[in-house]
Image (cartoon, rainbow, N blue to C red; front, side, top):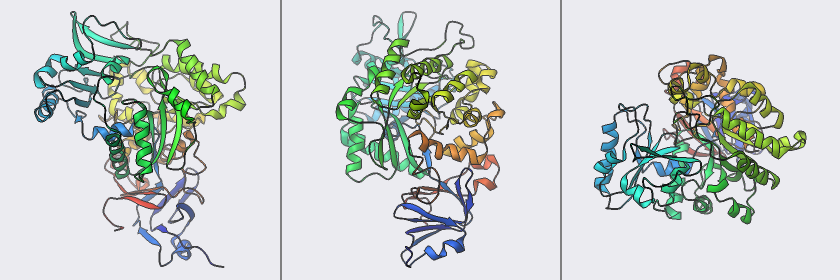
Amino acid sequence: MVTAKADLVLRGGNVFLGRGAGFAESVAIWGGRVIAHGTDSEIDALVGTGTRIVDLRGRLAAPGLNDAHQHLLMVGLGLSEVDCKTDTQMQALLAKIKARAEKAKPGEWIFGRGYDHFELDAKRHPFREELDQVAPNNPVYVKRTCGHMGVANSAALKLAGIDEGTPQPEGGHIESQNGKLTGLLQERAQEMITAVLSDHSIEALAEGVRAGQQHNLSLGFTSVTDPGVGLRQGYDEWKAYQQLKRQGGFGLRMHLMMLAGASGWPDRAIDLGLMTGDGDEWLRVGPMKLFTDGSAGGKTAAMFDPYVGEPENTGIMIYEDQQLFDYVKDYHDRGYQVATHAIGDRAIEQVLTAYELAIGNDVEAQGNRRHRIEHCGFLSPEQLARMKRVGVLPAPQSIFMYEFGDLYVDVLGEQMAAKAYPFRSFLDAGVYPSASSDAPVSSTNPFQNIYSMITRKTKRGTELGPDQRLTLEEALHCYSYCGAYGSFEEDIKGTLGPGQLGDVTVFDRDLFAVEPEEILEASADFAIVGGEIMHDRLGEAA
């Protein structure tokens, strides 16, 4: 009997096979899929003259990391935008805008992203007049880190047709102080800027996807869900993904959510016959994506209780109840999975009610639709029980606790902050919490995310809700299997059992053998997708 020889063998390390499946020394891949795992000696029979061997040298290999909620196209495009993520000084932020403006042509848009006004020394957003001073000949728009608000200069406001007499848009807010525009636009008010931004060509968008994929591969990711294709440029973004795939440019598996609701392109998707689950192992159609509120850090997440020190502020609801109920029921009845952004408990209540109304009494038959709540940050035990009852999945971001946890204490109080993004409660309830970054809102860095899941510590060392900590095995489970479950792909990825796709992340050390703080210093040495080495940090396999 002739035994097929493996295309790729990883050996000499600690291979994590998946939660509850244990570990192996070696794993073999053939034809893009795992064919066996075991001790090095057990896999020797699968090594032939054409087999590529990666010596793990004691490092950890694990099922490929899956970022279940990352705006990959925006990450890729953002690599060429003004990065304000690390700025703590207002003058430093303005200097970056000035430097870009000095290189730009007059009238050319300048787009920045990532500042956090709570981290800036001024403890406020930039003012439009400040942006005017550093970029007098260019329209400027700079988004806060959450993506739910940003500041425009006077030239950008003029192009968008926004002045002191502009009425407040539904589901959004245009800020004024003392009767003058500050330039701050929140939630759906941002659409007025988006409508006049210079469009990217399809080729430029596709290049953004390519750049985003390469960036993710360098971090060890093998799959990503883009949760809102169309946020910047509508249907063109979908075409860009399709074009790059046709050109053979995919090195990463993609799951794409179609931006729906009033600001999306659902009618086009329906006319094209795009249905949840369509596609292949490289690019798959995901849910219809809706938004209901903003961000907790930006004080626009819809909460039942007001923000600390602001008794009138309970956040912003994007839709009235019946509007959301109608959208959800329409998409549900058409057969789509639905994914809805909801961070605050008031928004989560609205979304749960919408799902329950759409599903009706036939929970057993309809619960397998796996409708999702993206973020699902602040919820009650009763709401979690309802999620379990109707099969609703959370897509939370533990990295928010790392990056914004101290801010949550300031704006919501320590008790509420300690309950945020409750991975332990989600996992124990059996609702498959997928791990993700929401980049570019947060860093794409998976090690900060893993660290936060197992320690519940912020970047300043504050421990919030230690009862919500996970083990490392559980954290990797959320970062692989649960992400696959959320896209109906758990039968083909998320573990390293025989028959699964040969998607593997190899870390630069054995994460199970180090202290949590050392995880923050880790890197990904390999990203292997379908048995092909897509990222090789040290050039070992060259």
